[in-house]
Length: 506
Figure: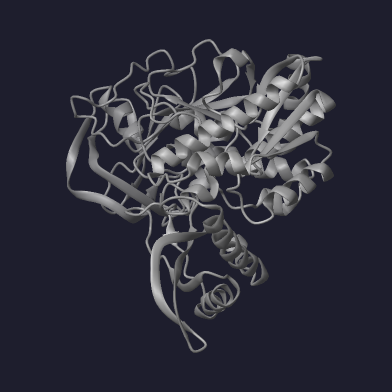
């Protein structure tokens, strides 16, 4: 059982980032709602309290009773977490004269303070709060200040509790990783959370859990389901059957390419060509949500049909990852969105779930995949929506529109790889617009389709900037698409960021 840090989530947008930073320091952590501390678990080494969109003075702010954990575990409060630790012991937290946001520099660090070991005065930190601590409780002491913030950090004299009003998890806090490392040292963590240790412990646990039982897994061609398949294959071998469905909305030649890749990986895969079923069901449908539901339902029907052909299947494998778990519940316990892997399978299938990637963030999944020997192009593949090209064709879907989009998209993605740009963007896509425009090819007037190119940079898809691809590259892509894709005479580039736009168009 891995030792772990518990992060109590008070609703900050950077809570997941705290988790990723701790994982990057080879230490396992779990994010739980602020009022759901896992009492009784013996492998907890320390606790971090996250930031929050609330002020501690708000009537609806999250104010849990922390008495059962204070003094028992080392605690680090970040921003709201630090303010709440002071407020809950009758310290004063008041609205600042102005919102403290942006870069600041530490003007004082208490000598010998373990939380700031090897961090020097002048180190840059990132502030983001409207309130500030104006008076500390009696047994708290200031251990760091900035020019504008007297209580940038404090510690509690009679217990292993610290608070910082800046954000060590963000990139702009230069020594943030060092501070978090120091906290893990205070917690006496052994830093044993690695891809290798995860694979070894997970495969062992899967063998014990599944025994000789048979598992069916729906493959998408994406990294999550692929790594799930590899782990299950290593644990139970041929008792795993994978199903890869061609819904007619994959990228050009993707069905054949993915099946070939999976064969090289030694997986037992059934490929199902269901293009005509999906095209028939989608005929004449333009509403995005209706398209999504039809595609999802069609996939479920095909998967269910294939599963029933197999005998003695007891488990359904899914590529659920940790952000799916976190995002499926708000900190108040209200569902935000349901898992998107194979959600909605018929209840009569009566299968138990096995989800070996549940503890991992996406970047960790990729590292595990590489450790398992998967090819880089599978690991580094851009995110691809579950409904596939169905939501990249605006309006109704026809086989001819799919051909046009597949051909245009194939040119775009191939040139991104050829020019060494593919790994520099988070996600790239070609969108077929329900717009025709006048053009001239040779001496003839044309009236054909418009495609939009989309490329974004991002860390986690929560926010995204449009990628500033070179003009000569975009010119090359445009010329190649217009010259080689029958039915397209205009190419545009999407320069919208998220927010206010989204990455996908539907």
